[in-house]
Amino acid sequence: MYSNFRYAEIKPTGWIARQLRIQAEGLAGNLDNMWPDVKDSAWIGGDKEGWERVPYWLDGFVPLAYLLRDKGMIARAQKYLCAIMDRQQPDGWICPCKDEERGNYDIWALFLICKVLAEYGVYAGDDRAVACVYKAMKNLHGRMKNGTTVLRHWGKFRHFEAMISLTVIKERYGEEWIDELALLIKAQGADYADYTEEWKVPIFRWQIERHIVNMGMMLKSEAVYLPFTKAEYTDEAQRLYDILYKYNGTAVGIITGDECLSGVSPVAGTELCAVVETMYSCEKLFESTGDVKWLNMLERVAFNALPATTSEDMWTHQYDQQANQIGCAHLPGKSPWLTNGSEANMFGLEPEYGCCTANMGQGWPKLAHGIFLKSEKGVLAAIPMASRLDTVINGVKVRIEAKGDYPFADKTVYTVTAEKPVRFEFSIRIPADGKAEINGKPRKSRIVRINRTWRGTQKITLALSFKARLSPRPKQMYFAERGTLVFALPIEAEWKMCEFERGGVERKFPYCDYELYPKSDWAYGFDSDKLKFGFDKTGDIPFSEKNAPAHITAKLAPVEWGYLRGYTTVADRWPKHRKALGEAKEFTLIPYGCTKLRMTELPKIKK
Image 1: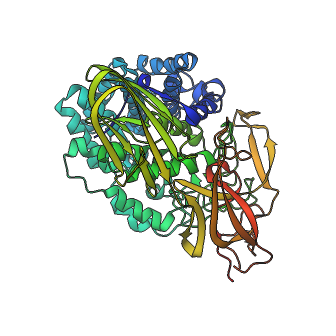
Image 2 (image 1 turned 90 degrees about the vertical axis):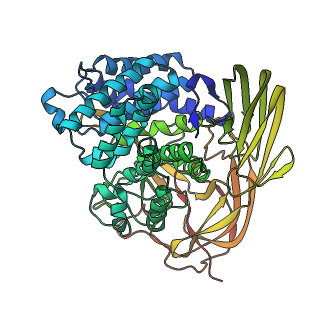
Image 3 (image 1 turned 45 degrees about the horizontal axis):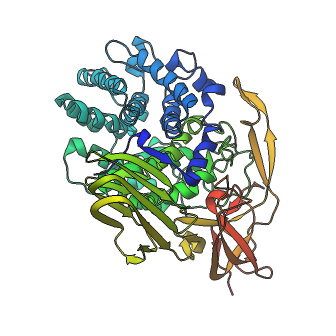
């Protein structure tokens, strides 16, 4: 229904371009220079990790390099891509292991590298990469047919990821074995509908059926299988998400999981990998179904959860983020997380596990890549963010440029320029939960379609309007939101640098670890439902805490809250009382994504 343009046709501008450059100059843009699992990976002939980490890293680094038109980064990406393709065996096997180890190799990594190569091949125009995927999947087809490869562990629970690359080669080659392989994989893959009862009660035990990253990935399962099953779409993603959210949801749309599903407590954590994988699922769900609710969810996760879990320079990140996060420190004794250790919410190089270190880079580039999408009749402005599209429609060169600071401003101006008259449909998606006008006329449709013959240069102005409000959470808690943005009370933090070496991996500035300790009070409740919203200037750091691009003024009063038992940097799940301990005062809440220490879910004061 919808699809991405090639990298060369999209040029991100505005704040998202600045965010991409920050990422390029931070951790995700430099792992090949300093992190052994990428720098010396077995994927390129080294002796370090030869499974998911290089494919994860390339999944974000490749689109980042191409969208920025950065020749040096493109050359570095090509070094890895070519090394991987050059090492493909004559029979098609591509993963870095000995022949005798193939039977026990968890082919989740095969699904992931084929996804990377397929998307790169299509969006960068490299036919060799698509041919490489064809040979790798042909090899897998033979192995699954004769039983030498059977889905297990991660491959079994991430089986649907293979459909990304299989769809590409199906469109390119159209051979029967591709459909047969897709159905073989589906038959051996886990059906998440079988596990929904287990999602309802958190337990202190690691189970792959409750793994939070798997949950983010699996939302797109039914949608990506559609080219092969030919079944009627039933929106299974919404049904499963509703169950997950009811028992494990957060104010910013993601699910808790530290590392497995963790309930509705605002001090439960959410793994960073789950954030970017949920975003990718939303993108694929919209492309397959055209249902705008997935773009609404994409925005909520992208503009809140993603920036909140990395430092402003993107040199460090958390493994787990919390809605109510009053500290990020090495925790004493037993961890409060269900299955993660005591360093999981510190900011650093690879707190807890290195999967998020490798995987976090896909979030911003893929969001930027999808600002404009191909539709069946032309172009869709999927997200009203600044970007520029240069493409050819019906043989005519067309440029569409979007200017504006959404979601930090309510107006986006589209300029459509056609080299000569050409007819096509330019559609604009309206974000949920607000009023919209296009060129001064109110519009209620969530996708406004403008089908006309475009001549010369024409401007279209989208004006949005949202209401700031308090929204409910479990246990009679509330949070402030406006449009796609969630707001939180920022807590002033003391950053304590930790430089050390562990397992041969060095942590040193700028990719050292940090502990964050609170320097301001945090135990408050909402004294009034009245909220005053205001925009501020978007700076060089879009999600800056000191120079936040928007704010809400709210009246808060201190309450008795306390700490989670045994800790001094983890707030208790809920306040002890909801009566004011002092006078209510005006406080400034800022976007959740701008905060590192914060209180998001607060009670209402009992009068």
